[in-house]
Image (cartoon, rainbow, N blue to C red; front, top):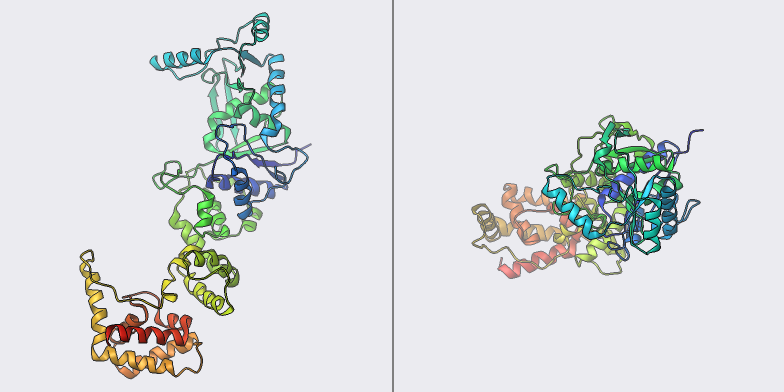
Amino acid sequence: MERKVRTRIAPSPTGDPHVGTAYIALFNIAFAHVNGGEFILRIEDTDQNRYTEGSEQVIFDTLGWLGLDWKEGPDIGGEYGPYRQSERFHIYGDYAKKLVEDGEAYYCFCSEERLTNLRDRQKAMGKAPGYDGHCRSLSKEEVDAKLAAGEEYVIRLRMPYDGTTVIHDRLRGDIVFDNDKIDDQVLLKGDGFPTYHLANVVDDHLMGITHVIRAEEWIPSTPKHIQLYRAFKWEAPEFIHMPLLRNSDKTKISKRKNPVSLIWYKNEGYLKEGLINFLGLMGYSFGENKEIFTLDEFKENFNIDRVALGGPVFDLVKLGWVNNQHMRLKDLKELTDLSLPFFRECGYIGETVTEKEYSTLTKIVELQREFCTTLKEIATTSEVYFKDEFSLPEITPEMDKKEIKSTERLYTAIKDEIGKKSIELFAEKIKNFPTDEISLEEAKATLHATLDEIGEGPGKVYMPLRAVLTGLTKGADLYNLVFIIGRDRTLARINSMIKKYNI
């Protein structure tokens, strides 16, 4: 009878959750879903030296934020629990000792000093470091005597010295390792804690994991895992090693060259839909040249055999484009609500937002989402809609010739007769609006009417208007600005600049 498909991720709580964790989780979830299976979350926390307080909860929170839900895990339980390795501590020692009883593993009493000297000798001889099997041939009487004397020990797997171990990888075909190049790995450490290899295999077996989908960096460990399954006489899962996420220079993605923390992407204002979509493009083709899709679409149409092994590049420019597409698709009210913390961070709104303020924010978000790549960018590029007190830029030595010329034009524009006349006529038209609210169409019509009545080119008319409304040489379309800030703030800006520069 065919086993039900069960996949998992098993992150370690050693710091901020890595973007690679979400990437691997996404493909595990999609594979389980399309095969009618289940996806579980396990916390591998046996490495107490690297354990970080609170990290486990952050893993739950960030994966939950992305919608990468699990059927079983430490937070929700399940019939195969517990799902924290620290709570399964008693299990691993028993399994390691069972392997010793069966002749598949052995006690090793080598001191750290001997092992250090061994590594130094091997290095000096140009050999790969590895255990030399010194304790492998100890008799039962010798082992019993050492145990009775209380000597410290570890338990090592008895690897075969000849032959090969073959990984039958779904994406890569058969990967062959010579057994004589794989040393007798430690299964149980001197402090009684299991190594990653033992705990991983025992847990995957006991939790019914049928497919191990993980990053390709685990390929060198896989022969050890296969030999453990053989030693236990257990059926091994199918192994599928995903391509590593890469920097633009094709090196493995790392925080030295790319942000890798999921928290960073959330705090920068990437939508969960955008980040998930982008991760789904990593080494994978959805088909039909489709690049924008939802998590549900990805899960429903997933085919593991379409994964390419070329090493997907984690390109923030492409991520920005994908995220922009999802911002455009998202319901405007929802997008505005998601943007609120970023507007607060900029100091543009307080904790409570009035109905009028919210209406203004909605207009800003609708405009900004057309070209911004993140929620944070929507807020940080919106200063012109909030800052009513400003000055024209000063010419500084740091400016290049183009910037100097552009700034000089601003000063000239507000001082010549055409500029003054344009400002005066536009202000008069705005003043005639019966209410503070001006529609987008009305703002456009007012600007066009001013241009027509002055009878000069757009540069001659719009440059002085931009100067008194923004103090900038370029930026937001003036009709959008007037539409958003309304009659009263438009007039206040104009009057302030007239007074400041004696226009």
